Length: 73
Image 1: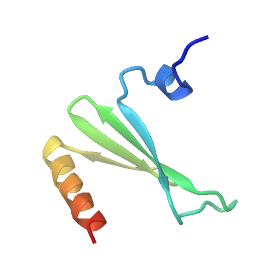
Image 2 (image 1 turned 180 degrees about the horizontal axis):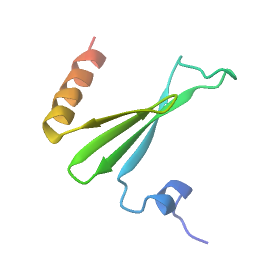
Image 3 (image 1 turned 90 degrees about the vertical axis):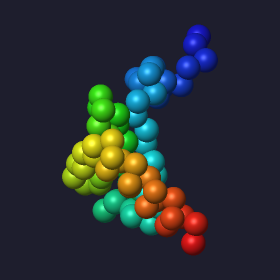
């Protein structure tokens, strides 16, 4: 039996993540999640209910800075 989690087996290069969205709650009362995917030199966010944003490396850097400042409050 392997020590690897299901996520590790599905993404052995660790180029995708699932991030829970607190307070977003789906129609069934469960929380949703944002999928983060590395696609070559691009970063994609798949938002509930399936909207997709694709960032260039520069845009991803700016978005990361924005997230950093929003959590510092």
